[in-house]
Length: 451
Image 1: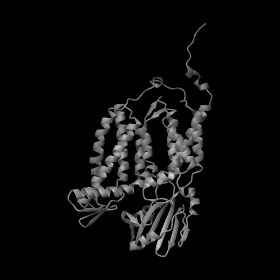
Image 2: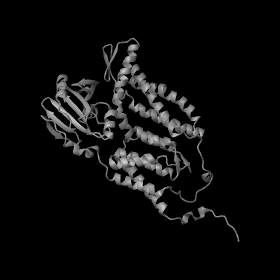
Image 3: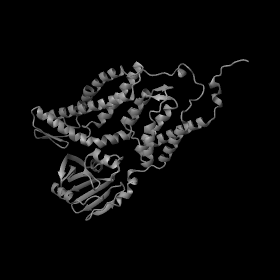
Image 4: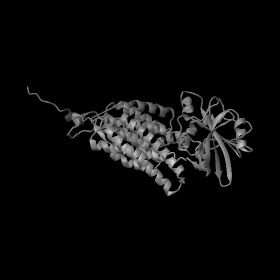
């Protein structure tokens, strides 16, 4: 009898084609959905183009290091996308399911890629816009307190800082949202660069820690920037205004990150190389682990992609429940209900907890109005945001808050968490009048929202 050692790869071409069918189907589904999202969801601005340019440099696969680390978020966001089929939920579900698929086909992908794709997506912009306004109010208050400690008489009223008879507005650009995205991209590039230079792989937890630290540095950077702009009375739209932002970014964000990233990456783990894939040429296609699971997830997401709804369509039923006595009602195409009477204008918009905030500042600015003197205020026993809208000779006094009939609040965390736990649907209520006195009276006499 002759003995012979068998190489299983010799028989790989004779394997059933079911696995290859699943692999090809998943590739087609994920690529198709990605293309659809690129055309209908992503914003092709400078930040996205910069992020896409970094993808080839950041993308790094540890062949053979298969992983199920994205399984739980993939299943979770797939369920969320099925329940609430909006583009953001579909994007997050495709992102996690796609990474899970690749990591069970090729090997582990650097977590930096996941963070980069999330960063350049509209989802990050939605989160930033949601919490930027409270951040602007807080930065204004802190800057005014620091100026007072320095011996100057400064006062913060909302996003306005008053100093020696002059007023300085902490606008969205000063809150550093664009600077924040740039800072994160710089941080991710540093991680990818040092990983390539040191041949080490940064753990996802360390990556998240560095991004949190980057966020903290960005807040400090913007605070210093606001102080410099106020102290030296540097006006917006000037070259010095932009130059101040660039210098602050380099000094308070980039330089500290260079030192910290070097320190952390020296203590990160070295990448694991599976000996089965070391210095070998694979003559057969990669095999997919758990093909049935991936096929089910892909088909579910394909179904979601053909059933995408807008937040307005998901809350259409709520529009019929909104009625304010004494007002003329008109439902706009944008999903906003307009109530009008002599001297007052009220806009009400259903706000599901998972949708991005679409506050009056966005709506009115899109109509050519300029918001100013935005602040927190207590009117008729309820805390609201208030501001003044100006356009040529027109001046409108506005107030807004979130209301579900039981709870009235301006706290983003509070109303979203309350609604996510199964509470009543919240409405964004925006009251507008021709004078401050009329605004106060209108807010005080406004009927309750449906419970």
